[in-house]
Length: 225
Length: 309
Image (cartoon, each protein chain N blue to C red):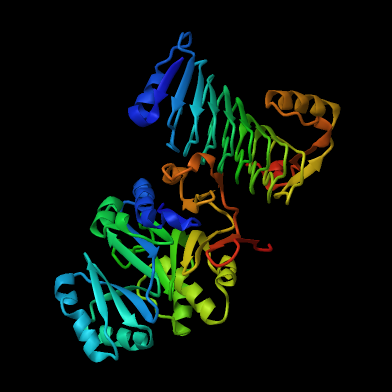
């Protein structure tokens, strides 16, 4: 295992070491100590490696991730796992605003709470939150799945496209064009798999599903140019 | 951008380190605001006197005989302690209004940074580290304090545009964000007789709170009302003689992290600002909710009040 002291060696050295790992690298396990809320830790990885960050991070941790598993043993600042393509990001603590924003793929697991705008404009990522999420989450979400074991804040799923939202607790309010939908067997099956992947012991039957009513202007073909 | 830090001590044995802890937090927030920096610190005051913290661009000329000149014009002696471009004047409480009037007359270019029994505000243009060194912030003692690093958006980079802003006696405000209705609100407040010195948006926010409280609102009520009347983005941290409060606008784009232990309550724009505080590993760390007024006081239990939508 490679141990990297971020305070001593600096961010640029860390990220360039991680970027330097080839597809078939033998250095598959990394540990980052003394993150101390630093920004942009383990951003832009593209190799099947596992990075354990021992503490809390600042902005944009594990952004643009491909293939790698980034496991944060603390909380993350704004924009964690932003625009992730594949791989897995696990946060043991809480996540600040816009976690998983614009993600195209991969899995983001947040074991604490996520703040506002979680999964904003998500495009295929799966996000599993063990706690609550804040307001304006999944705004303009296009594809992928958002699972919330706790409660959701105001304006959930505003201007939603095809993403699926599963919430176990209460929803403070739904955003424009977001509606509760029937939980059919295929959704239970999908949610079961997501809960296992996210390490949640919640039962899929306890969740409600929300999605787009497809009633906004852009869903009407007569408005197409 | 802009960075905010705040520290409220529950354990007064840390009071001698308050300045050092706040300075470390402030310097960590340099990336968020390299233009100017400032700090409001609540220390001990003497009964019967009020502190006027004043600033001058030519401190040697302005401050040399200032205490004597003021004492000669007032009932009772005025003491002065000069710190770089700032000076703290200890004025007999009964003579406060007269002292401000005399000061404006005999030293028209000297600016009042703050007024209060325990509050002192120090702020200047420059990197946070150099501002902290000029005023020896790290050696200051106090019960609580607030700091700000500025990246200017709405008005010029000047001493008077730096934060914190003194809103009323022993009250101060720092702001991360930008207010979009500050011009119309400034006109309205000036019609109401509120004194506003600059074109800065945050000063209007501060003046708004002063006006609300003058009209009978408590600080908590004034902060709640700000959620209706101020348009724009803001995370505010306010200081009062006995504590400090936090409020974020309903959209809550501007970051905020809080940490609490048995010894203190701390605020930072980012977690980075908090990492060197004692016992931070075991602290309860959380993000304050939008449109919710939080307040911690040395005199009463902490309060959290979510504004009804």
